[in-house]
Length: 299
Image 1 (cartoon, rainbow, N blue to C red):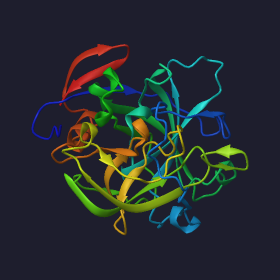
Image 2: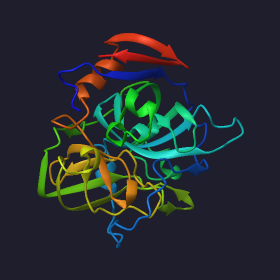
Image 3: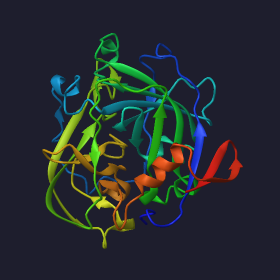
Image 4: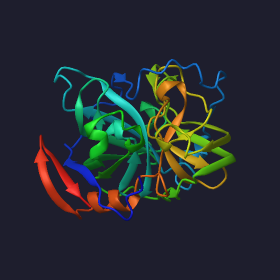
């Protein structure tokens, strides 16, 4: 599936600006595959609250951001925002799951507004100089994901924000290895089953454990692991899958379809091409057609 040497079609569209004071403590809903029965999930909640220093400037997780998203198909009177996690690979560019770009679960369709915060630790933290807000201006995901949420291996998206985040050390990434053998991996992000002062997804958590899988044998060649996910709620959608002690990502957390925690692979034999996504969001490629406000770009 790696499109580094073949042309791939992506969907690209503009986002509406969001005022930072628009909605500080909105009602929320979970996005992602809601059909898993949770039977194969880690039975014990081993997630640990991330230390405050780690989400301050200079902290190892300051480049992991809190996301809120609204979709085109939501009723204008619907006050809810979807909750998710993203991570910065450059100061103006967020990586997350395709669920955050195009919703199939509720048939809401494409995202129209995206909020992103670095250093977020609840609504009361937004007045801190170390908490930075940005509004998404453009988004790209794979055409395969827009076509169908059965294409789980393609649930990935890039979001460009209105201005660069300051004091950011971008998350590094490398190709997902085909064979993962007792490698300690972790999910770090904002789970929306956790509450803080009645706010869902307010705080950042981490969970690391050894993982072993062979992508040639996993469903859709995705990464699989036994890190905790809360029942049918797709907590921490879009979080980076990090190699312990390196702050290097090898995947994008995609929830737990069928009850197995899984991630979209990047680069390599089975991964999505970051080069293709970067070219698409930076304006390269040929627009093949425009459908319902989405430019389909061949890169």
